[in-house]
Image 1: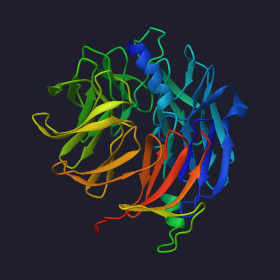
Image 2: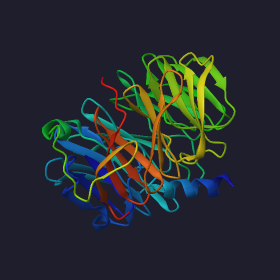
Image 3: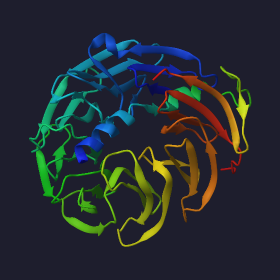
Image 4: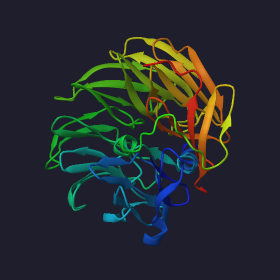
Length: 55
Length: 327
């Protein structure tokens, strides 16, 4: 049972995200967000852009 | 910002626009398609581990261009799982990670040449998930599937001490000063002395601690999953660093789908399988805000103003919360 669960977990972890502090500093452009796709807003906040990595 | 996708492509995206700056398809180097650990930024390079079936690698990409500076192939593993799925950590010129098959490896960060390797006593060939190591001033800590925590010299990989915890290590390791935290599959969280390996204190939990125990001031954040494993957790827990009391807990309405607490301002962010992102106040666990995105939440990144949120379906969002308090 445990092994089966682990195999599911492995599949579910196949994405990781990291933000480079260096790039963040280089690209800082406050108040000038642009959108690759159409930006959308919801009640809690705003999606500035989204990108589909296809996987 | 950087993200590895489920189909074997590593992306550098412009954080302002989401446009692709460069990408690298790891499929060209063998049957591998996964990025499971957090990448590591070292000067102008980004280093990440990959895994697959039969082969995995550690890559050092030139951050600006995506050019491969070096790559270290890994062919050891267990059936259907090969490579390095853990976080990569750095101490000086050396980097560390754990491969499938439970072997701690040390590479030279500049060349990718192997310094040394250290297998735990784990001998079964099941596809078990290795846990990320942790670093001390001059040493690296390794939580083995054999139920033993090892302290090794960073330079040579010699064992300084080892401590049998009585059950398989179920969490990544976390260091706070001279203390080391490790969870086990028999539902304990331990606090060890980093110099001696002595058990300072321990706490019996309701179910198995998983994921990345995360320091938040004088608290430790933990996920609990009765089935073990790094996803599908039921509870987010805050306990004191002395392991004496539970300060607060938050149950998932739909399982917490990532088990790496992400600290953002004075909150911790959690995501679930319904696409909900929830921010809880660190001090008492009170809900601060929530939003819903499309797909199971898989990863968080960001800075003070902006969050990046990855989903299992492969979409990464740049999200600006609406109720942002000024730092």
